[in-house]
Image (cartoon, rainbow over all chains, first blue to last red; front, side, top):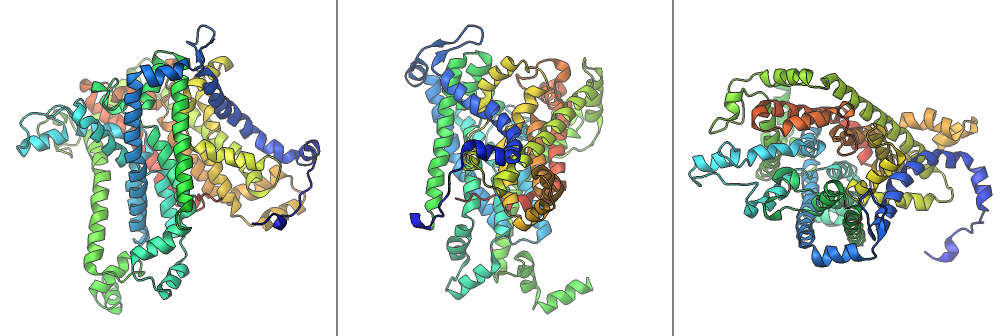
Length: 305
Length: 303
């Protein structure tokens, strides 16, 4: 858009603006205060603390980049956590996102009642924070675990497999469980978004020579769903980076096979109370989350333009 | 039956009627394709449902069956003993069951009402008026969706300690006010409202706040319900963690998850507890789902 097209705005002095729109500012004030105290201050605070040595009791001591240097050069466990979190985020984020969209697409033409039932079934697991505990029984280490008893009764193995304590399987199980929980808020908005796709646009597409559903999906549905896809991707990415493996495989997990950044952060932040170091981990997590989100947003905005 | 039969004949045979039913009449897919698609959906549904089915099944199993080899997904002799045990254990414990329930009630009620009010008050000007700082605030709200409590947990712990709010209900309630998902959804929903609605109220001389309460809130009820269910989910599952450490202000989910992780001797009770923890948010979602879907239809990100 050219600059001349914009209407010329007169800058009103800030005080006049505050006085004339007093009511508006009063209405956003309560939320803004909560947001500043519990989001803006903590993030800034974490950044500042990450340059200090702070154990809650003694006054913080400025140590420069020491925490970060230790993280990346001396803390093998952090590198392991970083690697695990990357694996989790790369699998659970995009795969969960695409699964959610594909299922939503398949559900969108089902009869209304059936669609609602399916929505509840798919969304259900992500509704409750502790539902994944059931997987601890399914993959239980002894012969009473469902999977173990199934394998044993078919004679595939003759002894129980330590699903949750054998480094060979742990990561795969965490990924399965996380994908099970990945039909979240984004999935809901995909379903709602697909319901809102304009029928007449699809019919116009038929006239323009669209012959099958895949073309329809690519040329009409996806472009008109872009805003919802952007929202869904944020939900998926933020969720994928905050996976903690320890709930199922215990802390510390065997060989740290499912040790994630969040586990590492909790270890230093709530158990060892090394707040400076924990803050540095939090800042790295923050950069990863916001950075990935920004990157994907940029990419998704380009699709179809 | 007769009506169905007539309907099938009118649409041109069973095959056509079948496809038409499962595609809302929008597709002329083959019967095979439709069956295949339904089968694919069914497999996914099974993957999602079976674990939940096991959980519900276990809650009704007597002790004997919980450790039977091979395990059966559904109880052979269903019993309510686990729930009775749970109730008994809860009433015997140092802090009575009703106290945990009361704590959860306070956290959920104050948290949900507070967030609904604060978010609605901020979402209204953001959606419908121009003022300085609006752009900045809108983009901060979206930015805040890109990270979560995992990042702010450590500093929040220190802030709460400094504010002297540690180990009070506020330590859990207040941070939930700052969640931006609810604000974002309310704002998107309000942007779709016609301006004439607000102008009419303003001409009558109503203040912004009064317009919000009497004109806007009734119309954005679906979005408010959505904020409610999302906030509820978060607070319902919140065990208080390291923010609440005195036993008699800890919430229900803390007690239930403590039982759930108590190990072999209490396996039956644990299953009953897990089922309760799981089913209540699901039940509330089922009740509010049409509101939620209506809200999510406006959840897209504009430029």
